[in-house]
Image 1 (tube, helix red, strand yellow):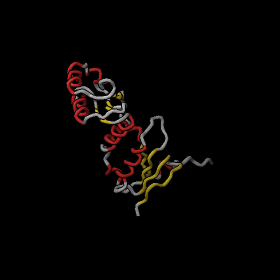
Image 2: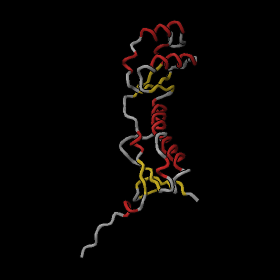
Image 3: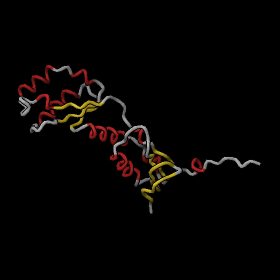
Image 4: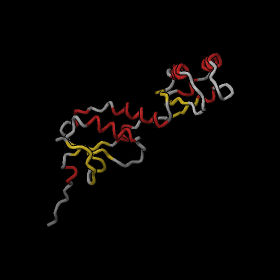
Length: 168
């Protein structure tokens, strides 16, 4: 008589979270204010305001935009505010920072939508490897979100995990 195959992982009650499910798809754009600098050094308000009025912002429709300045220049805070205001009606999301910061903001926003109650008193595995690059901050954030609810949190795959947290 053949022994039936038993999937102990499925019977363990462990819940798996794959952070790639919280990845926000869409085009990412880095807007560099260095292109708006006068002689590569300063941002002139009058010129900048004229640019903001004349530029075709529709090319940013439904895109995720990170605003930065890679030039060694002092950018007044109002410049980021004005550019953000110009992009808001078109872009899906606008942040001030680099593309890595944008990825972090997008996934952290997405993680806030998790119903953490579904993980109350459960053993949870945060899936580690995947085909989508997840920022390290997302792993920290999901741990913080789940700690008040989960019985335990592990990293990896249900068949091979690294213990992260266990409620006492």
